Length: 277
Image (cartoon, rainbow, N blue to C red; front, side, top):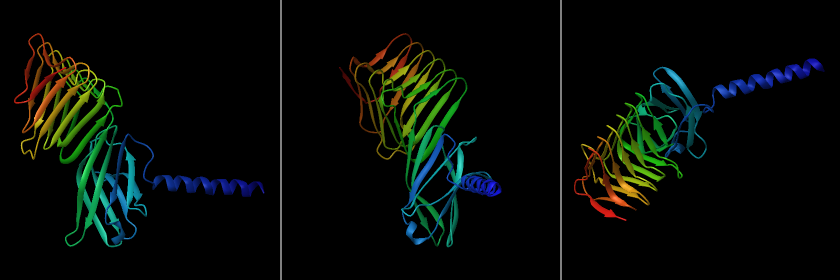
């Protein structure tokens, strides 16, 4: 009886370990999820996240076509492999950011074999970096979203650099929207719309910092909306520089004032409409 209990426990434990190794992953600060829109054409589909030749996570597409894999990445660039009885292909160069969720709508195509990303959404947690850290997302398909739920949205100090060059940018529900200080740089560019909305300063640049918000080199219909409920749309001090470069419509508003400049700071608002509170 005693031996049977021990043997049963061992089998259960081994089964748990094996299942855990092949699952979608429960650890890591990056979640890559999505849906295969035409999953019914392929039977069981396995999805694998790879970094080089290293497997970071693996899962099976659900009966509804959904998948999700949580992992860590040391490079921020991964590949997605989709496999079934009649399909085997890999989509390289998928950029992922720490503390974020990447959501993909996928179509698997045969003849020729292709993995088509119909929609690419990124849902980012608030960002706070310093020192020499660099965060970069350059992807023309990506729709970038950051909702801080009343907290600060993006903060950079030291010599750090944040660059988002994407399809669209939505930074909302912020206490402070985008803040750069010391010698940090924040560059936000989009093919389409950019929205920065906050309770306090929507853009705050201090010291020798640089903030640039504008169109990409190949915009589709770039518009910019910068709005602060109770403070300044743009607040620049010290020797900081803020450049706003829209393709089309642009508005900057602040509960106190659209733009506030002090010290030797420089602010360029291009053709934006300025609205003071």
